[in-house]
Length: 129
Image (cartoon, rainbow, N blue to C red; front, side, top):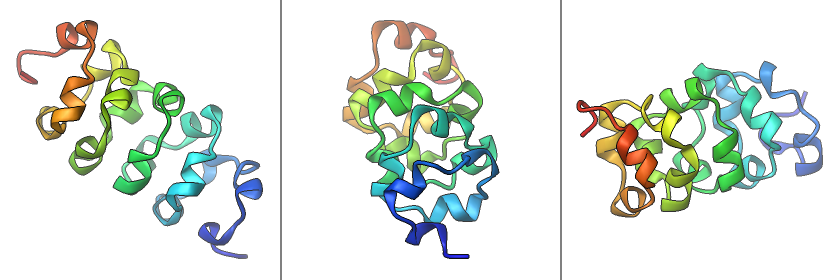
């Protein structure tokens, strides 16, 4: 079977991502990640979410960020958090922002911090601040 990273975007769109391994997720290009549907994004296992490259994370749409479930947000790596844009941070939402590790919040770029909504800022825990 061909490597998942060599598949066309049209084939990528048809894959059930609940069965894709962390290594396969890590091999996806930014372009391939950007064509995933919200359902595919939500189906990525919690442990595999941290395998998405920082370049690919930075290319997720706000709709894709909104599709991430709470446990996936909690599993983002510090380098992934640092790559988030202001629009992506804003799309995470207040409930999910509270699940991020303190180190991940600290790693947010200036632009990422600027994306925090009032509701997200209120949801931050004292440890995250």
